[in-house]
Amino acid sequence: MSNLLTIKGLKIEGRSDETWTPIINGVDLELKKGEVLGLIGESGAGKSTIGLAAMGYTRDGVRISDGSVEFDGVDLVNASAALKRGLLGKRIAYVAQSAAASFNPAHKLIDQHTEGPVQHGVSSRSNSMEDGVELYRKLRLPNPDEIGFRYPHQVSGGQLQRAMTAMAMSCRPDLIIFDEPTTALDVTTQIEVLASIRQIVEEFDTAAIYITHDLAVVAQMADKIKVLLRGDEVEESDTRTMLSAPKEDYTKSLWAVREFKRPEKEAVPDGAVPVVSVRGVTAAYGTADVLHDVSFDIHAGRTVAVVGESGSGKSTTARCITGLLPPRKGEISFDGQVLPLDYRKRTKDQLRQAQMIYQMADTALNPRKTIGQIIGRPVEFYGGLKGTQRRERVNELLDQIELEPSQYYNRLPSELSGGQKQRVGIARALAAEPKFIICDEVTSALDQLVAEGILRLLADLQDKLGLSYMFITHDLATVKSIADEVVVMKDGIVVEQGPKTEMFSPPHHAYTDLLLSSVPEMDPDWLNDLLKERGVDNIGDAAVDKM
Image 1 (tube, rainbow, N blue to C red):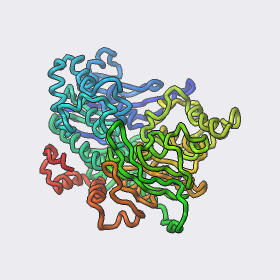
Image 2 (tube, helix red, strand yellow; image 1 turned 90 degrees about the vertical axis):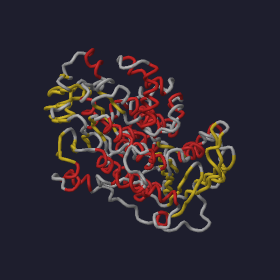
Image 3 (cartoon, rainbow, N blue to C red; image 1 turned 90 degrees about the horizontal axis):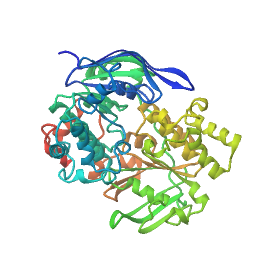
Image 4 (tube, rainbow, N blue to C red; image 1 turned 30 degrees about the horizontal axis):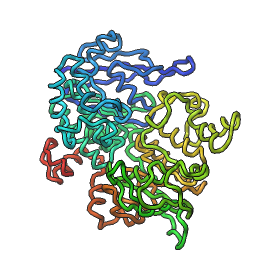
């Protein structure tokens, strides 16, 4: 079978201060119809850059300096803009890492779904709408006949990611680039999305490039894996060989990550006043309660991990603590002092002491401000530093998050990788010199090597500064690495909580057991085995909805 996509000697450069710097250093790639290639490597390896180049596209300030990209006989490097417009969306599609940042918030899902097929002349709007509903059904979206008439903010992250996959499939493309499509999803939703993507790729014999830093995920999706490091190809082989017998030391190091484990801490002394105390909190969006009598404590120097699937109330609880969503009932206390429920009624010092690192760095950073301005704003607002002192403090924070100040101070967020942007979010929170930080999926956008470094950094900062963390995550490996206590939430209710050692030891609450059993393993057969264990004979079986 001939190649659908052939990339030879690809070299890509990025411009910084009028100087062109190599990003990709002569990478080759071949992909046949119906084949899935996994691209893995740490942040900055060039995965997303290659994925975009496979469409003949580069971001602003980036150029293809050498090599060829040939899609079904078409030279995409030298193709006219009109020719590429005819291919992109129709025969080549892209599923972005952050669905929330990629959808137009002013238009309903179904309207955005039908835009491509109509513009490319594939089908009429009415036929495209019918096909969209069918794709929503195949991707196991709830209420497929109605969900398309919602706006992006009215559906969960997992549902939005599946809606984007349906939109990518709307013209039945020959090639789809999946750029970290399950990064921000909880483990149970991730299984549904992975199963759905694999089903739709197999059903329509679609070729795919699957970009991810999650080795367990790529093991379920890819026929072959290519490992990248700083723009260079490290090695490539079929998935089973790569997992069982990697050749290069760097690949072996990827396989051996997540060795970091925080030592067990002594029990909290009796009578100790919590840094943060949540008591009987009930909160609503509109008239519907989404949190129900939530209570837990976070003590000085401790990390409480809050886990649960999408929609369980984790981030909503964080919004209540920060005062962004005033609870309908209950109290939030800081160091024994009851806080005003609305952040607008809190003092500057009360606001400074509790900071938040947001899940979606793409939407949390102002795209028009430089990194120095983004981090410098809280430095000036809370610390009163200006001029040289302000710049020196920003440089210290950049050093703490392992970004070279001279290289990153004047960059815009669009010039950073997903992992680098998340680090900037961490530095911005640290800039206020808080006592308590809410970490909302802070490692979800990072590759496993960088994520381990960030966890070590957060642990060191906790030890040095006595910080307390509320760690919202769907990654149970992260929980095992860094948490002292665990709070499990489902449908706005705390179903179980306690010390980490107790929470990961049987017997578990049934929902906790579901979460633990849904963590992917680096075994290509894991997803199939799990589906069968849960009563699903094949990926397309609607019984997956019961998971």
